[in-house]
Image (cartoon, rainbow, N blue to C red; front, side, top):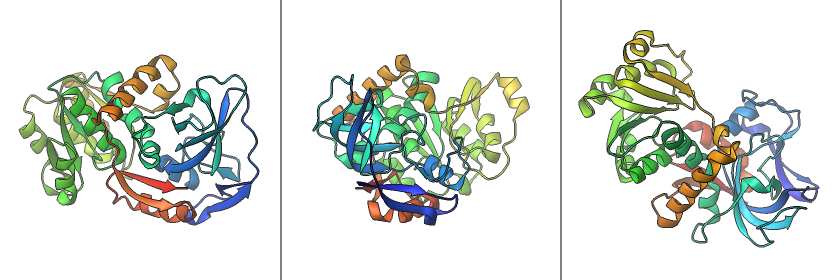
Length: 328
């Protein structure tokens, strides 16, 4: 028996239950992992509420990220042994492979031996944020040295990962946040510029920073912010949308798109995780950055496993700086 988190109905954090369940042995090509830490993501809150791109049969488990110790390897799995410290690349389906539990089974191709210097908490805070930021900035946008890049929702885990990746490439991270409350922390995290939405004209401030315009914008917000963002972009630029945090409608900036031949592109991390050809260089880039210290997961707060509902409340409050981690 092992403790797992499940929900029997959609709703707020209160629907999450810690239950005892039998965990089957790993199937062919899988391994069973004794979890030490979990990383929380907004996708999990969306599935709990019934608004995620995946609709589970209830009751359902959930969770996309974990780190722990290999307990058992299934048939056909090579390169791993019981006792290995590993972390999990987010699967395409958290219904099929939920991560919230003391014991979990995952396909071997989604399991990574992380650097020995990395704690389990940091390892559980690694793959979703860095793969998302890498896929957008490096794999898709081909962000280059010296280029300015606008990063919205900058104090989120993906925003902070994007700052670190931009700096590692030698690009110039221009961060956008709601107020100046986190300005000092963002500058300490490597932001070259911090622009507060509530404290001035976004378009004018971005143009003052980069008069030539930005070729690359990484946005998690959507909504009315599309208008000033595209107005400040350079000709031939690309805006990569990976979120949709704004509850307001997102306008289509037709004339900016036409005049500047802009690309507005939706992006899901599954593009990278589901394509081995693209995943391998992403893993190598991230593991090298972790080993060198250029990439450093920033953890906002940790919660014990028994307080998973409280951890979700903190996640949805939106005040965190970095990743929320649950310790098992």
